[in-house]
Image (cartoon, rainbow, N blue to C red):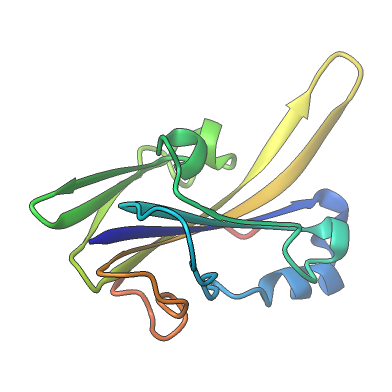
Length: 175
């Protein structure tokens, strides 16, 4: 049994909130085909990351990786904790300003757990505004995160694209 996690990160600056860039950003898919794995050791967990940005007008991923992580934790999952027990994957989402950004007023204390058995897939989607401030300048940017998580007997490139998730949780605000 294999756990496949697809993380899609979309990042943009305040200047890219205008209608043309917003339309391009909002047209991005919520799931993508997985690369075909031809060689390498088998793993119990695979991680597929795609990073889109306004730097290239969201035309293609700026970065894409597919690998078996040595350690799976917060740097990869940003507010989602995974446990796997008795052939059941549980994914617990917890809102934090650190991982999911502002505005927090609408999302105080949100916690949600979704579970998946073999052959099922779940999706978490959240977004936020992040602020950088130092003594000489300040800036803000926006991020939208999508996690597609599947428990499967093997990796197939259309695991996330051939159907809709069995369960999903959306924590998105209009930004």
